[in-house]
Image 1 (spheres, rainbow, N blue to C red):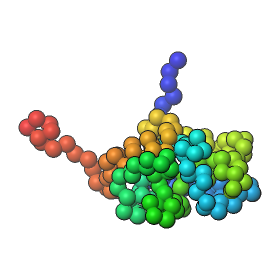
Image 2 (cartoon, rainbow, N blue to C red):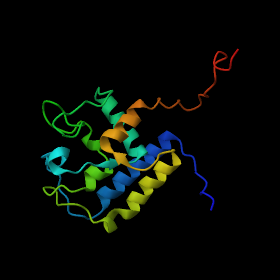
Image 3 (cartoon, rainbow, N blue to C red):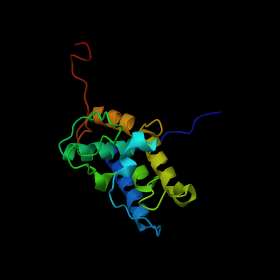
Image 4 (cartoon, one colour):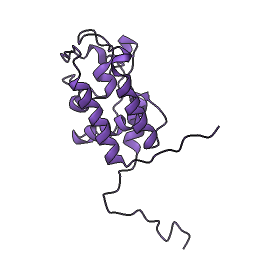
Amino acid sequence: MTKPRREIMGEEQALLEVQAVYQELEKRPLERACTRLTECCQFKLTGKTPYLTLGEAILAARAMRAVGQHKLPEKKDGSCPLLHPQTGACLIYENRPFSCRTHFCQAAGGPYARREVVDLIRKLEDVDWAIGGCGAQSLPAALKVALERPKPLKAGVRATVSPRARGR
């Protein structure tokens, strides 16, 4: 059996696709009201950790950098590393991952039924595949990978190998 051919997608296009999924979710008539209590962000207490695809992780990493976070802080209390250390607010709320938008938070209305969002999950998985991801990973692991990725080249800039790297 042969593997399906991997369609290659640029990082910018991938991020647009991820954002389109988030926007589509917002349009759905599902009763949800996040009150930002951050109870669901206490991974150690809930026993649940959100999982992110590579596209989501890259978008979250960009949002982290935009607020001055360039590495994942260690949280000894088991809370989400995206919570502000003093205020407890999510540092990237507007760019929070899909699972943070749809997961298990009882205060926000409980988890979405998979059947309500499976088409969006599949779109995120397709983007993951297209940019070389390896499937969803736990939030800390996915963000670590995304923060360590080299920044993408600007449009029109070609990657070249230096003469030294070529052995000259």
